[in-house]
Length: 455
Image (cartoon, one colour):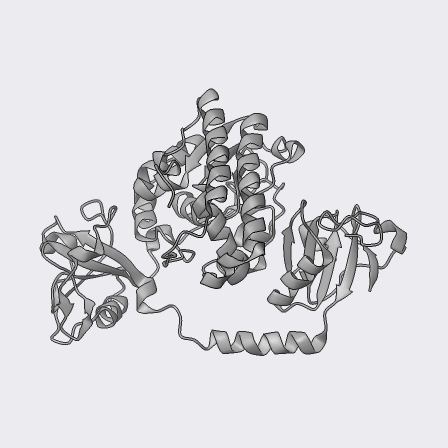
């Protein structure tokens, strides 16, 4: 359609409905594909590596010569990706979008979440039933997870607990009843009276499910007032490292919204109200970013660097690109040249993200995804201490209740998608990051990053 003037303020952008950036490999085709998946009419490229999507254009045309920045993924002067505050805009084919919209409606007709999405795990029960909850156990000869969850939902409890074939108890996490560490699911081996295919606890163990009742202890969240009254802190990571999950945990623990460099419309609709705030405004507790150039890093007063085993992080980002924030990519996608290229580029970016933040950040705190999984509350307390936010034991209880949020992928591959040469390269990157952490007296890499052998 042409080259348009743009305003860098988030609420004044030419295209305002979705955004992503790839300053190394952006192409017009990649941006078109992204906006097509979102079902948005207009596609715009700016600053060489930024992709914007929208239903309407909020800008005026300018001379085509002002869109003069080469796309990093296609080095030819004839193909440009906008310019400085200049956005090259294209219009999507209407018929193709209507087809995508119909497919999306079909997908939304699927009843989700399922009862499996509510499952929190099999837990060893060391608390007497009468101390778990003021609600007495309910005996049901047709007990199933669905029936227990429905009962506890109507009674406004956050947890549904099944300790044997016919017993359902409703509860909330309290100082006297915690659900920090799940046992193996094999310990819950009693068949439910109402559905023998499902399990309702086991010897000394209970199957616990989360209802959709909101935990009132964490219902209040707010922005920081006034603006810039706290340091500007990044939550930096390689994509696929659990940044969205950690934002959820920080919001629950502090009651303060988190922000983002990206303005992701999907995450905004899922409850991240700080997603569309100007990330420089200073009214959010941390700002999500995957960018790692020196100038960007030094914009922040400090950062939490979230690291995850690159084998897992690359796979998680592969899933997100193909299937969204909680979806799963098909097995066939791991046998393509695209996967080979993604692993090569992704592993290098994983290392560069860590090394550049370690090198240039003014005040850095390192958290490992794996440590959060093992010791959630302990790690959250460390994060709050770094952020200089008071610890609320009440809010930590509902962090424990809602530790996974809505962004957990529950199924893993049953094969290793990484070839031997991939393992060799990734292990070198892991060791380089481990050395940098050690030299700077930062939290060392967990041992599970270093597998003893690769099959």
